[in-house]
Image (tube, rainbow, N blue to C red; front, side):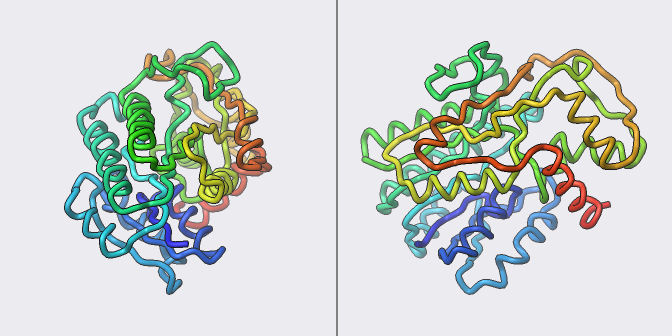
Length: 316
């Protein structure tokens, strides 16, 4: 199977690329290597992929329709896994126009090109943040998801709706995966596990909102990637599916896990929870279990041990 992975040099993208190559797929990776964080780190993420003759890399911005048109025309992918995006809730509050341009326009470009070039199915990375501060927990996919708290989830919800348009009008098979707090080796430096691990290691303060009462449904990268590949193979006509661990962790307990693994105490400041942040994320994964055979197996203690070992080996 020839599969295009956008954002393939990033955290989730590079793990997905490696897993696809390992099972024998041909992978077309698209990434613009922007400077949201170190482009060199993204290039390093692809070190294993570059050793495979089934891997090709195209450096292109998904906002560039003509550039992406050339890639679709030359490569003729059968399926697309669309992971490229501007991510991060709080950063989107500061740069909303950039988030709209990359996430909405870029996704629209890809949906249009996938439709024109006969792509069989389109897997779109969405986010648990679309649920906002919903009090209906655990979060189920039939939640209206119409009250996002920041530009990032608003753009992702817009992408979900646009994907439905292309399914309805053009018959494009679309599976929209709502990821819940993904973490693990190669994690981005703006993400909480990385920020907390780095700060505690360096005896610097961490920001733990609302005295650590919020809860997050931390989901290990290998579990997420298995869910993504299962969605590729299931080839649903149009589905929205949660991929989470379905075991929310109180943030103060999350910090305690890091403290224990590092053998150091955190210096904590605790401002109020920002209006862009929900107090709880909690995935109902019954649909993923039924449609994808999805079964997350990595608990947060084991997952953070793996992340910290990677951090100490590759970063510190």
